[in-house]
Image (cartoon, rainbow, N blue to C red):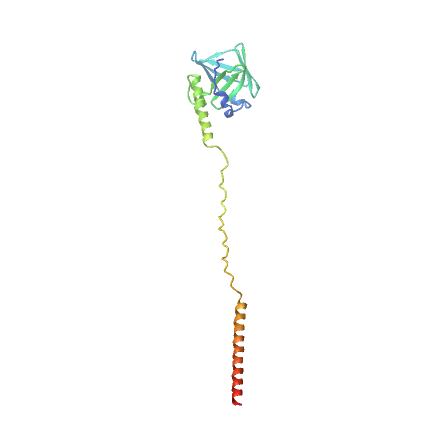
Length: 205
């Protein structure tokens, strides 16, 4: 089983589906390619643990597979057993990491992919275009709560202090002065009349 180094696969794990639903694996035709020989192999994972492998349309015998847990499966090709860990899965691409090495077996569901592929690097480019664009969209349009503008309080006008009028002199003082003046004039007038009458009286006698 051909494996490749693919640095992009670990960065795609957040986009990956899990292997807990085996129908995602067992009811599909998964195609791998050997770039060095240009040989395509079709892997069909049967529910009875039988693994059908067709190499350029010719079936190879003595193959099997076994589901271990939602992270690992065991694949037997001829007389060799491979422990493969789940690395990435979507509707079109399955990547299994070979245990103990940093290499991946990459399979393509050509029906979901939409066309035949020629090299494994074509699939790597497909993943880069698809999920790097998804990542950019998330960065450019982050999901976040709308920022509400703070409610601006109306600016309060400073209260104008009433202009203080100059304190005038009490009216009672003015009235008192006028009253005193009138009394003095009245007394003076009385005094003049008394003096006048006195002089007149003296003159007559």
